[in-house]
Image (cartoon, rainbow, N blue to C red; front, side, top):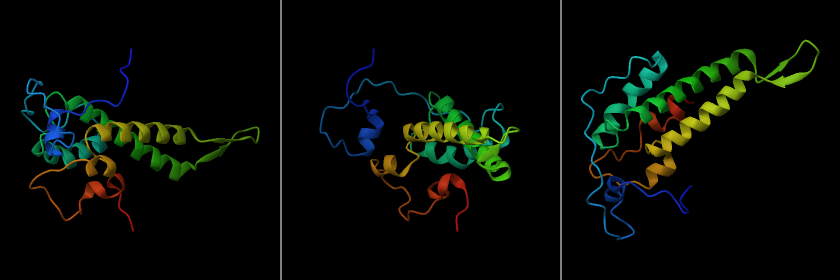
Amino acid sequence: MARPGPAPKPTAQKIREGNPGRRPLNDDEPKPPVPISLAPPEWLDDIAKDEWRRLAEELESQNMLTTWDTQTFAAYCESYSMYRQAVVGVRKDGAVQECKTGYKQVSAWMAVLKDSRREMVKIGALLGLNPAERSRLSIKGGAKDGKSEADNDFGFETG
């Protein structure tokens, strides 16, 4: 049965935010080790591996990627890859397709795009990869210029 109320924030996130609720921190929270290697899992495709390489070092440097988080991060990268492939499919085949009977229907690529985007955004929020989640974090000594590839429409070029 689900617990009522919002999901609790990890202690590390509360510390980064300056413990705004001023409640006692959980000193007994498990502290997973950092990954031995930041290399992407072999089973990821090339697009997912590129996304892994783009973000893994930054996440690990902020203690947001540990050995316990690598599968969650891999799922994010996999969703990102599916999203990118679906965008290409929609651009190539169109968002709406006409059946043999003349009936128009939404492309299968649109379903893949929608589902992978939803998963990517949901998992990305767990990892602090969207503007709303980043605005809740306060990282001491991090980049303050506001310019990074991560802020660039899921890594796609804009303009």
